[in-house]
Image: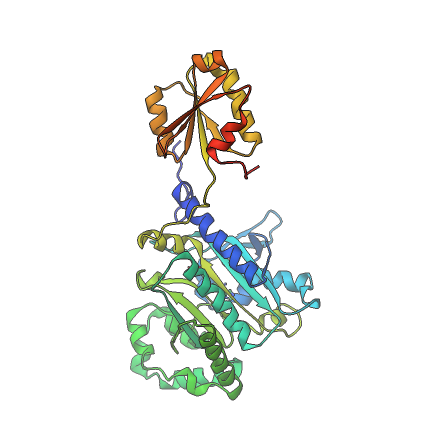
Length: 428
Ligand code: HAM
């Protein structure tokens, strides 16, 4: 039986692991600098956690959730995103009783039943942050600052940060009424079948449609900014002012809405023009001031973002951005020439590993030249060759393959010299 991984999933290995570790490592350092603490929530939740918060009328809930019944008939869903789970956890565990804002970050796999294509998968990884308990616009700017620092640190140069405000429930209601009024009968007929339903149930979602005739109709829509109430206007202005203060370049776009119903006020996305437009967002987020109370918690505001790890790595590779490998740890490869060298070689391997030196040994007796070539190609810095002579004289030969130098060492009297030669003394 020949089995493959399910459509839209992938095995992550080799070079991609180096990229992944670099992205996650960089993010962890930034989260630490901004004082965010890690949280891990389950990979699946009761379906309502997502359907109620993300919104019944959104594409995610309508078409993309992996929902199943467990053996007792309870409806469960593999998480399509992290925010709803975190809010569920904060309310369930009453994390809001301490110092606010509560600043949390997460790294995890998410599941969406989308049509797989470049940069769009059915299982993908996100890292994100949620700041819960403050409505200060500085916090909106802070989460954007984290997202933008991450991409800067990773080596991206040409990304565009798009910011918008979709207002509070009151000003959005007025805006949507005007928007609906502005559409003529002929416009409605040109909308795609999904958007015709959205027009009745949730017109804001029309702004999210990728269909070209819907995009054309939306381009004539009134501008949300003229409908923002004075409070929303003031907040948005202040967010933009903070971004300037933090030296973060941005573009405002009144057409940005994002695909979740929980947003209020500021929303944002970081996009790359080097990616196809349907999947050009590397990360995004926004404010969701009503979600905690919707989950039965107190009325506390919140804001956060998530970034796609797979999409970020794909673009790093496409743009030739190299990963910075953790510097300096030398790697040693032991080559035992034949079975008679086995015990002595294993003693040396034990010695190196106990000292914390990254080391391995050959398990197949290949030609020595082949072994050396393989070790060089596999990123080893030193080779220790153990043959009949070495076993007899209790010595070993250390080859520095980068500097083309070779050292002979007496195992009984000068074994510490190995550590000196490979420069691994600090890694115990
Ligand atoms: P989102 O925009 O749906 O936001 O996802 C964030 C990022 O996850 C996207 O920009 C993209 O890089 C990646 N992503 C999404 N779907 C896929 C997919 N099918 N394949 C590969 N990558 C994908 C959220 O999830 C919100 N929870 C963000 C947030 C946090 N808002 C407030 N707090």
